Length: 180
Image 1 (cartoon, one colour):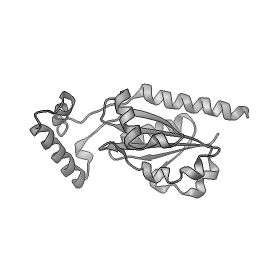
Image 2 (spheres, rainbow, N blue to C red; image 1 turned 60 degrees about the vertical axis):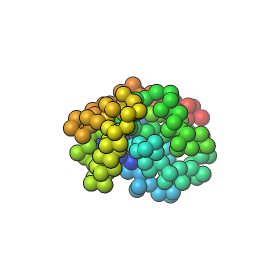
Image 3 (cartoon, rainbow, N blue to C red; image 1 turned 60 degrees about the horizontal axis):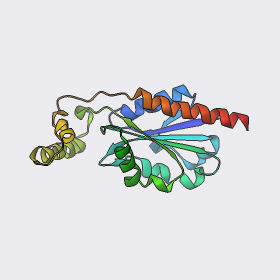
Image 4 (cartoon, rainbow, N blue to C red; image 1 turned 45 degrees about the horizontal axis):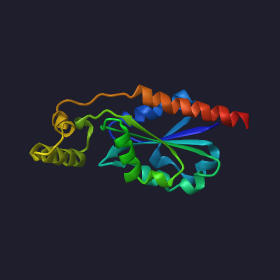
């Protein structure tokens, strides 16, 4: 089974997960923007990882633009990494807001790291505006208020258990494919 791991990463967290997945299954790895339709025939399994901003998995729309060519005879796994606490509710929200329920894919949510200093100017401005709105919102939740400290204190998180689930599924798919 040949596996291609594609990723879209902003501050390196998603890329780190993608590198570990590719290494663990002896797969190839590529930034998602370099993926071309002609590559589909060279692989049995595709893994896409993207970071989350505003409930949207970045790079996912471009990846799914190849779905019709990939859906027959290929396994497709998607993971999203972001600041949200991994839960059934946040996973369901990501599936809904990214219309993943329309596709036959395996989806995983991983907790990602976040470092404000690694953002470009535009994203720093957007993040600062969001934090200002949270600070002024009397109805902001405890989790939202906890984000106010994010500019000075990066979040460092690596979801080993979630990553191991993805790698385990890929090994099982490889074993099934090897029996055919």
